[in-house]
Amino acid sequence: MAPPAGSSFIIRSMSDNASLVQQDPVGLRRELATLFVEALNLDVSAEDIDPDAPLYAGGLGLDSIDILEVALIVSKQYGVQLRANSEENQQIFRSLRHLAEYIAVQRTK
Amino acid sequence: MSARLTEPLFSHESPDAVIAYRGATAVSAAQFLADARHLAEWLPAGRHVFNVCADRYRFAAVFAACLMTNRVNLLPSTYTADVIERIAESAPDAFCVTDDGRCDIDLPRVRVAQDFHAAPVAWQVPAIDAAQLAAIVFTSGSTGTPLPYRKTWSRLARCVRASAPRFGLSNGGNSTLIGTVPPQHMYGFESTVLLALQSGSAFIAERPFYPADIRAAIAAAPRPRVLVSTPIHLRALLCGDIELPPVDLVVSATAPLTRDLAQEIERRYGTHLVEIYGSTETGQIATRRTAATAAWRLCPGVSVEVGADGAFAQGGHVEQRSALCDVIEKIGEDEFLLRGRTADLVNIAGKRSSFAYLNHQLNAIPGVLDGVFFLRDEDTPGTAVSRLAALAVAPGWDAAALVERLRDSIDPIFLPRPLLLVDELPRNATGKLPRGALQSLADKHLK
Image 1: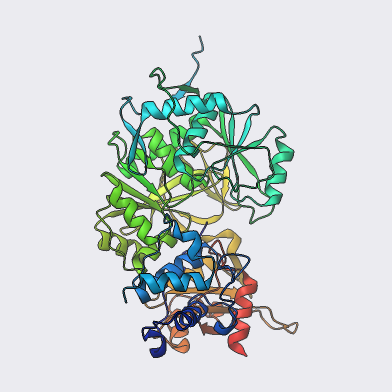
Image 2: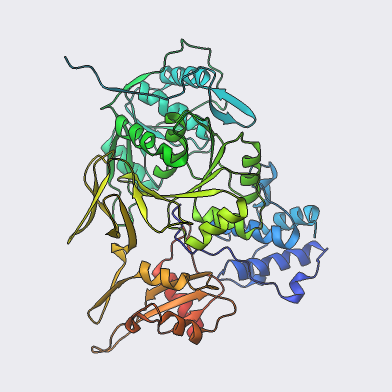
């Protein structure tokens, strides 16, 4: 990995709607999709993301830099610190649905 | 009389000295030696070893086993099918050593055990022939096909030993090196594996990825501890508001850090940050304390000459005179400044600048979080001058004011037309910005 200088890890400020705490999994999933599309500048609309597609390459096509950014989003927004060495990690990134379920359980805000 | 010149496999003087940490377990130099000897007997025939072990301890033990049996580690920067095929062609005896059961690299493969506990062997630090070919590294191929560079053991060992004092590691102080970079990458190879072996220090086997992993790895590592990382991880730590336990030194390489970011790291974490300049071809050739100076100080014995055909490094551990990809301004016998990359030259209406220089000016403006210049695709009529465009992430700025600010440092001919404010730059997997992605993002904004 050879990241150039000036790469951004800044998360966009969230809209008022998105910052409302979402308790239902579907709402949380949609909220995550919106955050990802904005923060990762994905060329899809949030509604078009298949909740069961893998997040890594082949599915949503996220790479390791995106995944770092996802980690920042979920830590800032939900107070969840992702860890690579947890057994759950493979599971979490299997799909948006899995990630949302994980966050729903782990969130502290 | 011609005494055979050798360099020791490692510089740890006591068999009990710690050479690595695997999780919470300290691995002694004696155990490392036993594990390496065991692997040396276990490795199949064939001299060229594609060592893809992700675990830094397994990588280092395989590397040591290869050194002891006159085998050569192959360290390409990517594992694409093309690269593997080229390796197989150039070295028909090559095989792959992996620690991952899912590895599907198309070479004969052997898988190392997850854990080694080889029986003790007699304590004698192997003396490796100085002229022995230890590794072949490959340039990343952004300029075309990957090119091999041969690394002899003496040059590798001397290089990191000569530079160790820059990191406060000269006296076998048994620092703990925490690397967020893989051991196969030249920077990670030198600054975690080789540096630990040659300075009596220890590396941690894991490679922390998430900010929380990095924090946990630091907390678990005995002091003094050194974080060996990249601008991208350091930024993630800062932006994630991650508090760190005390870290005695931070090392960064792979892309230049701005002074602001370096100062923020030092202030926030109460540490020193040393940046390394180098390349796959040359290994590390200079360092600087980025928070304090823009000047790079050359590693002992290395010299840089600047001529009409660019800058070249030679001497010291540099195996062969190598062209450097950056515009270098010497400011003394052993110091220089970077003035952008030569591959990045931009020429408009007879004036020359570089994208790196322009990008640096843009990113140096307070409030600009990320920014890049590029040459737009245009159906320009014959006489029109090609113009640059720029994309910037700069909340709170408006585009016109930003361009006015740039005017202070950039020749008007290079000012962006247009400068577009965006939320994020379209970086790819390696953090680079393909021009096509810039163009399409710009097109989207111009619609």
